[in-house]
Image 1 (cartoon, rainbow, N blue to C red):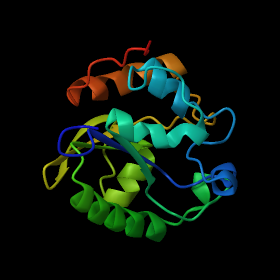
Image 2: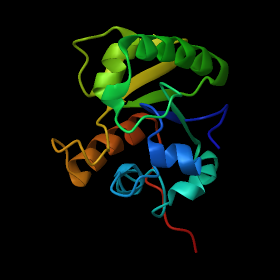
Image 3: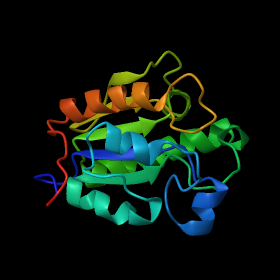
Length: 169
């Protein structure tokens, strides 16, 4: 665990139907979150969604902007994003991670009222927590490959002061 708490709190948009059914984040086959997390050096091996509890041992956490499950994120209303951003802000103030990583720049823009936000570190802070918008790992996001996403996630890992995770013995 990171000294003083989480190094990075990853925040998905909302649970997909597979995540809602299994209780595991990014559970849909084809979602690239877990492979990208590993490729970027955050984890020493590829974790399965049902191993999400292991994230804490690496100083990482995981949550969502909006709690309501949907088949697609575009089924969410602007109001749900804004309320989710408010609740997420409360959670971040309570947990005090070093970084909040919102997985999906469009979700970040809507939840925090920053329509011009781009992928990367943001000006916004929540208390002492810095904020980073990451590309959405959904298979529907064809603009980013797993390799280019891993490069961006690795930039966050480096900014968080985390060395690449090494496989154990």
